[in-house]
Image (cartoon, rainbow, N blue to C red; front, side, top):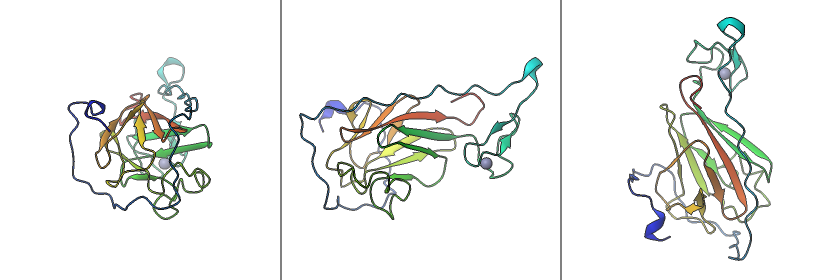
Length: 194
Ligand SMILES: [Zn+2]
């Protein structure tokens, strides 16, 4: 980590994550290893509209129930449209996460239950690698545990500082170590603001 990797203007916020030193069983990557090609983000969906401006419901990202464009929340699960979509090509993994508690990414089955199985054989990914938080305003933040990770977390090629909430934007590439990459899509609170 060098000073030039930290863009100016980032604000250090209190750490609300549980922290723990990186567990054993993680292996360091050799500098010569070439990164895999990054997955390409899918195009943002346009707001649904039928002929002559007739409103057409779109499926809820969380429960797939139909949501009318005028509805701010899903009538079935009460989620707003705001969420982040993370797409990883290898291992094949697609994560959607909305406002609320952070999404934990890593190999720890209790700490990161949504990713532990997919990354079980990827020992370059730390057991507690990174957390992703989505705010109700549609902003998203990634943070490594304060203890850091062996192979680092990269946002658009720049390694993020451990223990610092770092803003994530639509279209960003989020990488765990050299080989595991996520394409990031952000869907904001209003229709079509993804
Ligand atoms: Zn729903």
